[in-house]
Image (cartoon, rainbow, N blue to C red; front, side):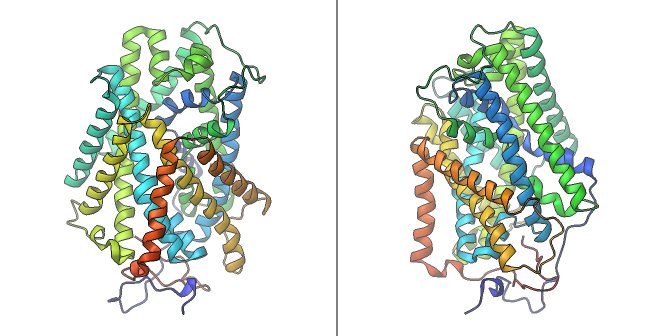
Length: 476
């Protein structure tokens, strides 16, 4: 019986061993900071502050949880930096879990990514688009849901056809998003009279119906992306020092931006005004510049959400394609139609699941909030496993060269694991029915694995070797 390191995932027809492919160190610290900040700061900052405000008891506490979110994100990024520099691989979390726990755990992660995490993120971004598109032109009672469904259909179709936004367009959209954030900060601080209920006190104003744990779930959702940004750690010149500096400075910049945005929201709308808004940036800009400001910021946020959703659709289909290549029960997704069209079957399955999740908006008060409920428990469960994998791989492969080591080990990784465990608990205890649906979908994957052991039948992949330089094999 082969060990976890000896499990063969390689194509049966390949006779020669796969040569290791490691990332090239071509990025400087400034490049890394730009990439990390660009990945993390997205459309979420225009939507989640209202949910955070609804779950804290004072303005000071609201600002405090954003600072805590920055600290937690930094610790998590440092843990990921060790994993990605030690085991650089395009499989990311999938590869770490495979090395630490074996194929079955890796399969469950791939299943969860296909059915909950990635598709839930697509639906979540689609609802942000819908909320702000509705500010421009309402389609009626279910306007946000209808807009969300339309954007999923449109972007999935575009990706299947093979049409891509050019690099110049992507830069333009990112620039518009940055300008939108700056406009919100300036409007809230200088153009809107202070709301009557503004308070920066850390003393709770009420104890009814609030949850600090749930507020942290929303905050860390907005900081989401550092776990993917850390993947560039193997491409940073000068290794350890440059990566650590890039991570620290990036998280500081992101935290500062989020902090200023929330001060602007709090000053302009007050805590109750934030909590009662479904498009908080639109409400603030409307108060500052009237209908023109509302339409302008709604357009910027809608474009930002659309851009993020498109990127999520693009990467999600490729991870589903990898699932189809590695596990024969899902081989229908492991087909690449043409170089131009890409993994069409994976796009279709992903789009169909995302549309089902969007339909939840017909039955809930807020489709966006329901998607957070749906994805959060599963996301934090696997993030906790990745944190544990750091300890497992330190013990399992102690002689493997580690270009970057988490400082203050084992304290910081333990804090990361405990934080993930707490947020897993909070995402179950304080969320709605969407969380139960997400857990049920993960359970289906477990049942499927138990009833069909052949699901881990070998299609593609690599043999892991514990020693030497063949540990960094490439998974596509």
